[in-house]
Image 1: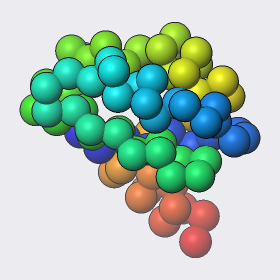
Image 2: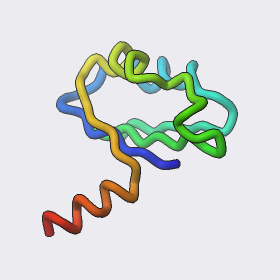
Image 3: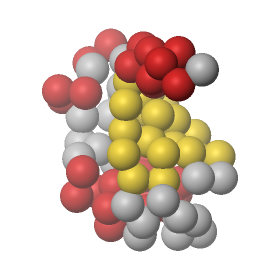
Length: 79
């Protein structure tokens, strides 16, 4: 259940730390520039505490998230 959130701008400097505090067992995140990689682990996105509101407050910038399969298909369509 790997998702990538593409951000419209630079996120808050403490965003990754704030989001780390909300992670459930098995979940992982990585903030790289204007991309937030989210691995929901075995529980999937349905059981996470990483809601849209949590992302908005922590990141301080808008973004859109897609799972890796969808993102790959979008890249193929634009190539």
